[in-house]
Image (cartoon, rainbow, N blue to C red; front, top):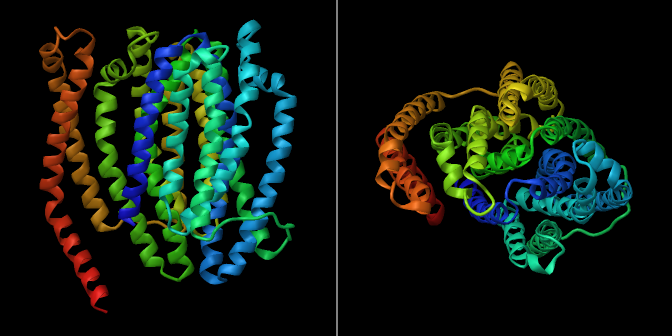
Length: 517
């Protein structure tokens, strides 16, 4: 399981690296002004729907159902199930696509009420270009769910890389389009086609292709939709809070939307590379073990996923809290993206980071419910957290602008995480074993030492490169990253080295025994 998490995390890291290159290009070409704000609204529209109906709700209901049917009923039943779900998804997405294209002006007006005149007209035009991406990425999600349930994670994790590379290519050829924002929008649509080709090809390799079949309301379909309904409600709650960000930020000063975007991109690095990777792998793992009656093994898998997630994410928490401005300047402060823009995005990043720990852990914790087909219990936590989140956004938007929106998101994340843990523990579905308790204490110590090191080293390192001009911040960030890696790596080796060597020895022993058998 850990190997699979590292595989997904590694490919996701490559996706994030290419994503940062894409964002550097976006910042250079579009900056953080009106053109950037308009494009980000057009991009968020299909992403909001995707997160509700595709990655969020669909994966929560589909992956455990597919794993359970495959484990208990065999290949023919699981193929029929996948074919019927595929047919229903295509039909529903076609209807949504037609409605979205027809009523786009009203949709944009609701999404960005602060837009008017040319900004509004351009937002409608770009949204009509990006909206078909929703249908493409929904089908990508279906194939990814099938592959993940079959313990094939590489293609699905690699698909977003195509989005980044395609947008970089279209932005590089921006002179061929009416504007740079048009180039970025067409890059999104072209990428959706390429991503779908990648996952359908991998599914064909393992004989997991899907076909159109007349849907039948059998027991498996009923059970799937019974799980999907609450999952859609829960994903809607999350997206409603994100939608509130877009609506409120459109009413703030120009650049607020862009500051939120660039800060969230950094915040999403550990969430995607670590948190989502762990949740992606642990969900089918727990579902398979529970279907086989191995409750103890399922709980152990969950604890180990949480342990690894904490170990890898704590350095990000330290860096994002101690040197957020430096990170933003080093990555984005060039071209149309100014030092003032970097300062605004850095303050927003620090606010997001307050909730980074629950952000990265929530997928692994909710897996205990989703693996059992219970999508309703996590929804209750999400909806309560969304209400609190939005209330804090409204309260903090005045004094803190977009930083208040990010801080409200962090508060909502802690409430969501705390409620899910409480619900699971009360139902006897979650417990922290002794190893995880000890590991958490060790990781906390290492994280505090790392944060103190970065704080003490920041000013001397910046002074060291004060004559480097444009490369000063890049060199300083690289140096601090190297210092932090050495400090944290040595602490982790000292605190966990003996434990990991013992685990490696046991793993080697099992592999040798299996080979001899």
